[in-house]
Image (cartoon, rainbow, N blue to C red; front, side, top):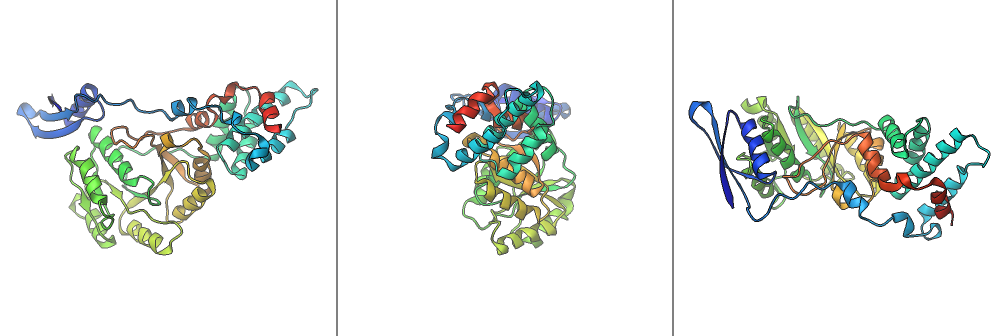
Length: 365
């Protein structure tokens, strides 16, 4: 392990120097106030393991074979449905150029959305919205449609209220909690970290391990009353990011417990949902948490899925703004905002350059 000592005027400047010199996986060993009001921070990094690059989910997609060449329409009921739909928007030879252009976009966008297992309702709405876009590429048209259908609202580095992360089991809430805390500390606006997941074996130990690298304690609240005391006590001036136990959206008792936690403190509940789940299950989950007052969602595991239809379906069905995405299980490779343009590129990836007639012929075979 390689140790280095940094001196800066404040913690934010020190963290910036550490990230520049040692990378995002550096560990804070100690901090102290030095002479003349300076901050001294000792940081460490494994010398033999350079920080890995932040993965781009688009790059992972681009390395995969063309999914449209892997199966024929008659082998897959979704593809069979798509073939019929594409045939309906076939363009007559004597159609005006504008009509041919619009229908070419519609075929490519329909095909891509169907591949991503986007439910029919969202496909039809997005294709209709994309049809109103003039010029550009299919990705541009889809971006226009997504910006109309969905909302995008990144998390603030200085939230007005504490953030409570909620969602089904296994979505990655604990890692997201650590990522939000690490980013806030790096920006010089540290958040308190609280966990209400005190019953599951190892849950708090995992979060404590993450926070040790930030030299930050973990607060515990086993029930709504303890959470209320934590949030309304003397430390309330510093906002918190609150980790919760996974809640089955179809279990009334578990959802009632989340409702009580939300009501116990002045928090914004934010849904954490893993990409790649069944789109209809994702829609039901989003609706269930929206009924608890959730208005934004963070999507995790974009690096571990090929299809993003569930992301679109959940945001639309629950009326949830997409706040951030995560494409790595490593805390040092944090969350990042996403907008309609990037989401459209993830959906279309390299299919902008495929001729619409070729797509129609392949799907209709």
